[in-house]
Image (cartoon, rainbow, N blue to C red; front, side):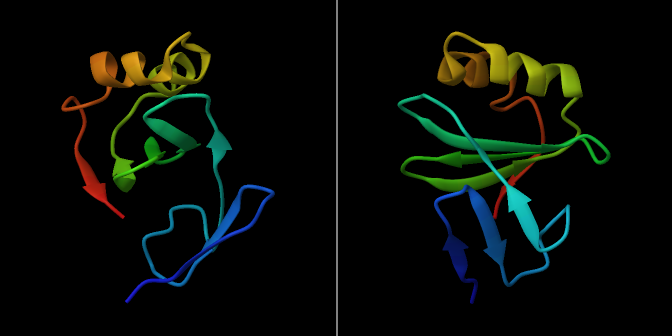
Length: 93
């Protein structure tokens, strides 16, 4: 069983071993009807995306340029669909 605690400062603390950056992870909220928040770990090229309705997914081997493109895109959802979805290995976390 996994418990996630969310605080208003966008810090998320979990009680599982799926964390890449330790027990504290910082998600950056995005303005999107599909994506809720994003966090990226450049050392491991790991991208975590929280979706409004389907939970959080971890994408592997994502270059930093792709993360930067996602964060600067006019439409985060469109960028995700065109450049990340089905292009990188992923798992629900």
